[in-house]
Amino acid sequence: MTILLSEPARPALPSTAADHRGPTSNYELVIQAPQATSRGYKRSLNLSRGLNLLIRDYWLQDTLVEEKLPEAPGRTLEFGFNLQIVPDGEHPIEPTSQHSFLEFNETRTQHMFQPWAGQRRVLKIDLHLVTQAGSFAFSADQLALIPAELQAAIAADEDDWHQPVGSIFPAIQLVLQQILNCPYTGSIQQVYLEGKALELIALQTAQWIDSGPSRLPQRLKPSDIDRIHQAREFMAQRLDDPPSLLDLAQAVGLNDCTLKRGFRQVFGTTVFGYLRQQRLIKARQLLQDTEMSVAEVTCQVGYSHAGHFAAAFKREFGVSPKVISKHSVLGLKNSVR
Image 1: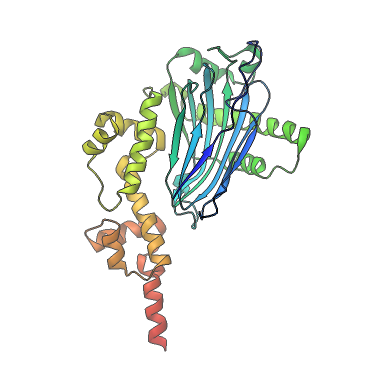
Image 2 (image 1 turned 180 degrees about the vertical axis):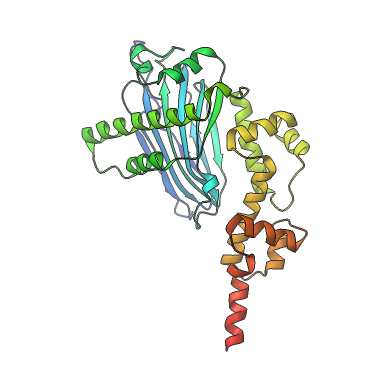
């Protein structure tokens, strides 16, 4: 089944440009579908100076569609932290699933729907710094939140851009966990979360500087980023029969060069690196949760050679597929009897 999460209606636009608005009013949307096995929530909190904190925490068995309402024209600087975005919500995440990014683009002025495929664990925290309603420039008090090096990158290029920062360092993980487990409510919660948000901005910018901000990749348009996400979803649904790179690019409306470059830029891996990882994650799930043999799983996830599958599996998880195969464990128990 498909679950729909709709943002609440927005208040009327402010009468003065001095009024800062985040992308949404404060709200929490909880998955409430009696027939569904999915659970989770999406929470939005406006902090000071146009800074918005957005938390998604989903355990999805069903397809989830987020309805997003239009925003006032402006610009958004996003600090993104993907803690867990992987198929199979029942198993621990892979380290490569954790990454952070910076994004600078125009606000969303159209009504849109964002799908999340089922069989997926999503834990994601984003900070959005949004310009004053109707303005395309950050105010002086907003610029005070942005480190000088990042201000320079914004000023140097008015086009939209997306910049992967890299793996989420332990110091950043700690702050993210403190946000998720905030011990306060009311006005104290507001002050606490604002402090943690500023700490995240400082830590992520420092990591971005260390990774070499002067080597910003070629800019990706927001429409290209959307198509790259579509390509990932398309691949996730066709693990056993993946399209060629050219067919995938045509399916999402990109040329193959933009898809290759953009996929690595957005997700930190190649298209077929992602395919290989997701096949192996699915294989591990099948071996642990079903009585399928290693040979059956090999075919199920699209490998034609059992030896190649076993070698790739061991490189990824450090053990051979036979070690965790439920089928092998059952066979061992039966032989003991």
